[in-house]
Figure 1 (cartoon, rainbow, N blue to C red):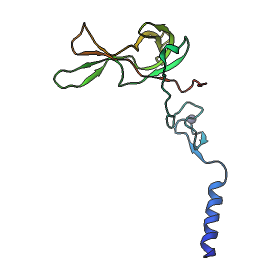
Figure 2: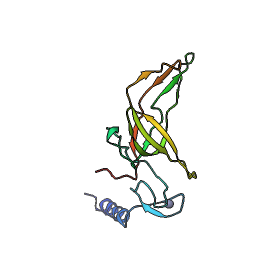
Figure 3: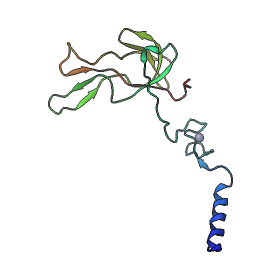
Figure 4: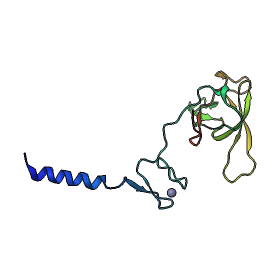
Length: 149
Ligand SMILES: [Zn+2]
């Protein structure tokens, strides 16, 4: 056994174990725990795994959710076959649920009055009114600030 190498290894280990690992926030310069996903100032290092709202009918007034882009109704370009999504996206505060979806206020930074939107959550169908328009349910996730019980 080579004692010199093992000594070096143990000193290396000691060095890395000294204090909790920290990382610097690029926004405020605060030293945050290396494993924290967000800084106290609101800077997000990485997004935690998103939890999908599995049963939208259980949503109630005041719940904060997010609607994920790339879901919901879309218009299909008949020539290029590209989809243009026409749904409601971003952070939302639930007002209530209706027959085929959720009524919620879209939260826009810097705006005092939020816009009441309808988020379709019903069955996929083709629009009777518009050509190449496909009505699809949205994908909703819980806002990260909301604790899930
Ligand atoms: Zn910060």
